[in-house]
Amino acid sequence: MRRFFPIALLALGLVLCSACGAGRNSPGDSSNEDLIVVGMCQVGAESDWRVANSESMKAVFTEENGYRLLFDDARQKQENQITAIRKFIQQQVDYIVLMPISESGWDSVLQEAKEAGIPVILVDRMVDVEDESLYAAHIGSDFLKEGRLAVAWMEDAFREAEDPVRVIHIQGTLGSTAQLGRTAALEEAVETHENWELPAQMDGDFTQAKTYEVMTEYLSSLPGGRDIDVVYCENDNIAFGALQALEEQGYACGPDGVSIITFDATRGALTECLNGRIALAVECNPLLGPLVETVIQDMEAGRTPEKHSFVEERVFTSENLTAALVESRAY
Ligand code: GZL
Ligand code: ZN
Image: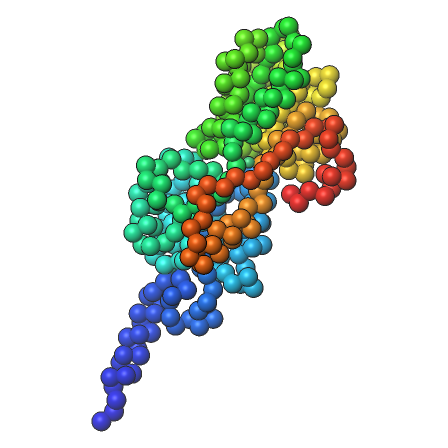
């Protein structure tokens, strides 16, 4: 009698395999047997910083390095990030790496990942969840500290000012940790300096196009004698949009004109800093791929990673920049 049983079992096994996930413990596809499968959930490609961040991740999580990277670009929508996480859970990936677009709205989908036994590593911005066990580790920046570095420069630059120091504030994606921290630093400073004024606060959403639009609209609405001392831009792409709008409306930007402050310090911004159009660039390091890999390797070795690790960041002005340094920058 023919041995149907083993063949039937094999067929059943193949059907089950095709239905089971992409994770390492998924039998069947031997080529992936020992690759660590990482489901990565990126915000989008809204800024130069974000592009550099994605490149840093893709450079680390390669098959040669032992990984299979499933990369999802959420096009700046939280619902796309949540959909991607659910897809990664179904695919039974080994790790989920999430760059959360905003802080709120993550509790239930991270609970689903926890119940599926898939560790979540947060990168860059933070999530605001009740239960810290919903993520294994967070690697990012101290955005309040970045803002306070900018404020310290403003305090020094305007120490002798008797007249009001008029600051235009252009914010990043509202509700993102980067926006919340950088905004808090400026707002607490305006509180403590009675001669600092904040005549306008607008949402530039971390993009050049949005900023150019809202800043042009604001500047066109101003009567004559439009006195602006500082434009506090919460990232470089906002600064580029603000510069374009300001100069089109006849404002000089630089040591004898409007002081532009920016965050990220990508090479484009550092070039403008070197030539004086931007007064201060606060570094925000996007090259987080290697740090994420360290966390994953720690967890692979059974070690508990640091819950929060922050990257060291510095400030740049035309005084401490050279063309060689700008050229040498990795992003
Ligand atoms: C900061 C990051 C911000 C950058 C922006 O770490 O979240 O998002 O400052 C990017 O350029 O869009
Ligand atoms: Zn940062």
